Image 1 (cartoon, rainbow, N blue to C red):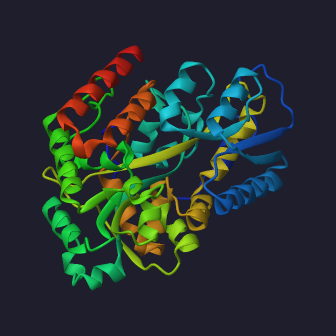
Image 2 (tube, rainbow, N blue to C red; image 1 turned 90 degrees about the horizontal axis):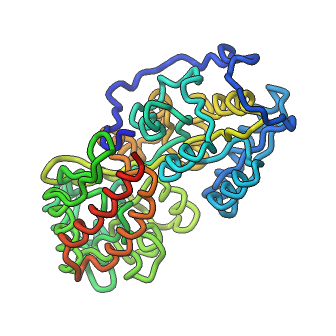
Length: 412
């Protein structure tokens, strides 16, 4: 897997509709000895009612047109339910797979590698294909993706005497506006105390978690140290606070409750603001550039198909339908995700200009590490980041470096 390769919107061009008929009949390879039960089961980890309804409607539409029965189930604990399904040789046919679970599922033979069978395989962002490739095997179709951007409370922004011309584009400017916005109980900037937010500063400084090939840890590096020291500076100045230090569960909650004037979040914040904080006006900007340029993190899932499925051919056909351009645009409008097809993302950006900064981030987004064992390393990294304000950044990076390298070595 290549984790530092960035998405590129430069090649966004309209493409033709999917030729699903090219994969009709028994064209897909299904070497499983498992018997079909006559129904494609779909297990999802839903973000809420909007996503559940959208996926249910899409699967029902495919079922009606194909004549194949299909049923969607929302997992209460996706990872646990998948593990139980794999262990009992009775997994769902189609399911969400996060990047941090891909390598493990691939290594233990739970996943069916169907990526190269897809008629639309060349239409996904190359970075997303890389994210779901193990070795040289493209395992599963990227479902959608999200990036991080800077979300700004427009009322608090104006009250601080700031204008559009003050929207920060550099680290120094971010520090300066955060100071102006910090007033009383309101802090200038907030974000969750985790790599999935703090890590966005790494590529801005020229850093990363691994090398291009994903074989060497690059955590303990001068760019990453510069990034952590910058974040620590904001925390020590009191112009930035972790969302947990504001008594909230994530940056979006702290932002929605107007405990912070800015937050670093993904495009999923749009749904939360609409549903939970409809009276809070905000705007979105790309994350400020660091000394090495722009940088953000990308998050994505794929549509996994179980190796033990007795309905793999129909499962792959369903995935092609769910990743068609029209369907991806429907999903994007329903619950705010960014399409994984370059053509669909381009159309979505034109239709939803307020979310354009999230999509522009695809030009330079970096994937978090996803090798087997990396999830445990990130979990420990998160615990250390909680005390970043009073800790030694160099020591944190050194510890995570050793842990991640050990995980990478055991994965090879």
